[in-house]
Structures are given as C-alpha cells and as structure tokens.
Length: 492
Ligand code: NAD
Image 1 (tube, rainbow, N blue to C red):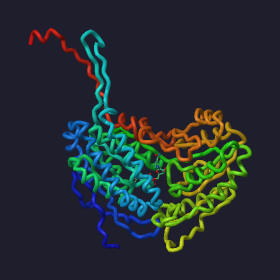
Image 2: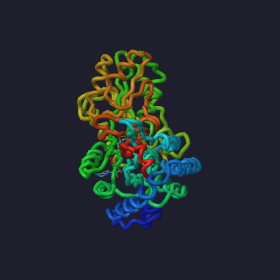
Image 3: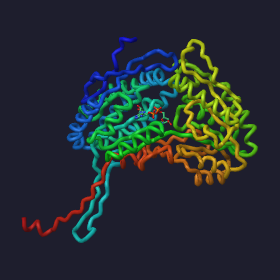
Image 4: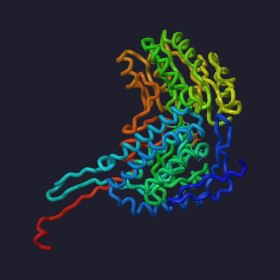
C-alpha cells in the first residue's frame, strides 16, 4: 500500500500527476482499507488549472448555449451507463449504502437535466421604445473562471449543484473535491473527458486547505461555491470576498422536526428514523432534534426507539445494510463525545450505538443509531452539529414553544413538522426561521429547479445552489440602451 502513487489532477484535459510533497490516505470507512492516496496539490497546480480555465473561457463563452448543453446530454447518459460503478465508489470511500449512493447520483442527474434548459433559463429581457426610437435590453453573460469546493458527505452529488449550470452558462469550472473522498470525482471526470468537452472547460484539483486558499487568492478566479462546515464556510466567505470574488457558502446544520399530537404516528416514525439515521446522520438535512408537542412525547419516544433499534448497521456494499459507518475514527470519537456531553447535560441515552461492533468489519468506524431523551435545550449540545446517527428528543408544551426552540438555534438549514392539521402546518411554514421546510417530509431536499435554501449560520451569501439562483450566480447582467435612427438608412 505504501507504494500507491497519488491520484492525478485533471488539468487542461490531461490527467496530470501532482508534484505535491504531501499525500493523504483515502480510507474505506467500513473496512479501514487504504483505497488510494490523494495529493495536497500546491498553489502552482491551482495556477495551472486556472490558466487553462482562463484560456478555455475565451472560446467556450462563444460556443452557442444550444451546443454547450450537448455535452451535458452526453454526460447524463454516460453517468447513467456507469451508475453502478460510481455508486460503488461512493460507498467504498464514503461508507453510505449502495442505495443511498445511487440516490445521490440521481440528484446529480436532475441538476444536469435542469441545466440543459440554459438556452431558455439564461435569457435576458428587453423593452422597445423606452424613449422614442430607443430600446433597452438585459443580456446575461458568463463571469469567467469559477470554482467549487465540496464536502465528504456527498462525493458525487454536490459538485452538480454548481458545475452543470456554470459551464452551460459559458463559464469554466475547477472542482476541488473533499480529500477524504476524491475517488468518485476521478470517475466522474473520466466521463467528463469522454464527452469531448474542450480542454480547460472543467478541471479537477485535489487537495486540502492550502489548495483551497490558492483558489481563494487567485485573481483570475471570479467565483467560489462552497459546501461544508460553518467554520470553514466563514473562512472561505471572508477571504474570497475580501479578494473581490462572488462567493456562496452552504454551511453546517442542526435540523429539528416537530411532532404534533395529531401526527400520523406510523408514517412519522418511519420518516424521522430515515431522516436521522440515513447516511449515518451525515446529511446536512438530517434531523438532529425531534421536538414532541404535548402528548406526542411518550408514544413517539417509544415508537422511534423501537424502529431505530431494528436498523441493520453494516458495510454499505453488503445487501441488507441499512446504515453504514461514519467517515473517520476521529468522527466516531467526536460523535461519542457528543453523546457523552448530552448525557452530562441531563439527557437519558435510551438507545446507545457506541458499542456497535460489526462482525467482519471490526476496524470500521461504526456507531449504531443513538437516541438521547431530554437534556438541556440551552446546553452546548443544542448548538452543536453532531453529524452522526444521533437523534435528540426534546419536548414542548405547544407549537409556539417548539417554533421558538428552532428559531433560537444558530443554524437554519432545515426543519419539518409532522401533523394532520393544516392550521399547524401553515403556522409552522410561516414562522419558522429555516430556509428548507418539510411538512410531513423528513428530508426537505429541494429539487434541482429550486434553490437549496439554508438560512442563518447554515448559509453565507445571497444566491444559493441549484436552479434559477445558479443561473443568477454564474452570470453577470449587462444592460444595453441603443438608438438606431431610421434616417441613417438614407444617409449611409
Ligand atoms: P469541511 O468544512 O471540513 O470541508 C469541506 C471542504 O472544505 C473540503 O473540500 C475541505 O478540503 C475544505 N476545507 C476543510 N478545512 C478547510 C480550511 N481550514 N480551509 C480551507 N478549506 C478547507 O466539511 P466536511 O466535513 O467535508 O463536510 C461536512 C460538513 O458539510 C457538515 O458541516 C455539513 O453540514 C456540511 N454540509 C452542508 C451542506 C449544505 O447544503 N448546507 C451540504 C452538505 C454538507
């Protein structure tokens, strides 16, 4: 294993070995097997990618939108044809189940499909005769070299919140995958290469912090799209915008669901269980706290504990596994400490996954579904993103109190309500301060034609990923006021 050479970057349509002096192991979180080495690419390699992207931009922006999207149609088909292999790679490096990996790639495909509408979506608007004989038009133009920096928890999907829109609008894009899961993007870029996209339109640069900082500091990079933790989002937003770039940063989360006494218990329990424990809780839309209102408390606690305790934890490639491991041993330790913290703050650990041992995978980072009942609603844990398979149960006397609890949380990524009452549902939708809201939905993930809309500490910027926001983010508006006097046709 020590002889593995680091995976290459993809710069100017050439698979280029990195000259990095440091490389990290890419480790299967279920088996602890080293799958590959990932280079921490230096600034010089970022510069090479930016130069290729800048050169490509000059001609790519002139390619008609209708022709630009033909590459996306090809990519969509190639992704479909290679779905099994990509899903397998996601599971091997990230740990989620094969079904979850396929579902993630389905979301990637949907973003490509929406971006194929660019010839319509990118249109501006105009008005004749704003004054006699004078017309005014707004044209959208691409902005140039763009970059996206993405997290470990969706190795395939998240770059697609940005990349199809960026390039369909006539920009070029550099992708910096998470150094913990860089292999999925290797596969996806091999398919991008097969589409025949002109050299430099898309580039892949592997690395970590220094690679990101080189992108943030490079004067030719016009925009940064980031998804990851809030602490890093703050750094990226501050440094990127200080350097004059357009920046959008989707950060961390602490999502709540409210379970009303009138909720359909069976449906609610199943959906909340999937939301809390799917992808081992490593989803920015995972529910972290279930707030029961009134008499929902006892029956929901019993039902969710019963359901969570039946989940089959195992290797994502093994059929029948319903929940995989968390990403690293450090994550596992951190999650265990969060559980300990919850207990210290008065919660009862009604289901404890810390001792999970999976036969045949003793070296994996497994932690079973865990439920904390009660504990301080103002304690340290209440403001901490756990990002693991841990559900906290809190209680409120009424819906107002439940909404207050959510609105007091620093994060605002998502929240949901489970109820059979339209009155409760509307009040919740109206008053809650999160950008994505579910009503009888556990993971309120916006479809590709809607913005992925976190609020508060879950988002820094103005325009979100996906859909119309992406078109707005990846274009500049140019307004033209023009006069063509009719008498010139006689004079000239
Ligand atoms: P992370 O913030 O550690 O890393 C994200 C990216 O930033 C990676 O590419 C990483 O290389 C880079 N990075 C890390 N530290 C850096 C630093 N100091 N300077 C510059 N770059 C740095 O996030 P993660 O652990 O990979 O992913 C999990 C986090 O992502 C969670 O907080 C989760 O909520 C969040 N997330 C949010 C959304 C959303 O839409 N809001 C979606 C998915 C994940």
